[in-house]
Length: 84
Image (cartoon, rainbow, N blue to C red; front, top):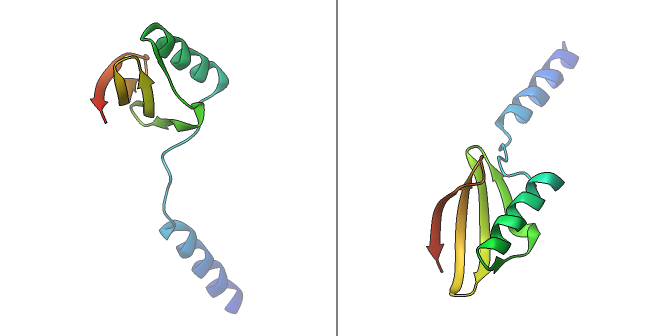
């Protein structure tokens, strides 16, 4: 009986833990994103690329006209470009 209670408590604790949606991009995704940024005359630290459910979030992108946060779709199209 104690064993069942311990297992139930462990399962409940695991289910209540936060789920992190942000993952690192694959090597191919990172290369595609950096190529797009190069064409936009922008650069960034690849560690600041996050995979989101609907695409990619690029933090602290440095372009020739300033610093931005950029969101890309899963098809690598610019969805939003916010100046910081």
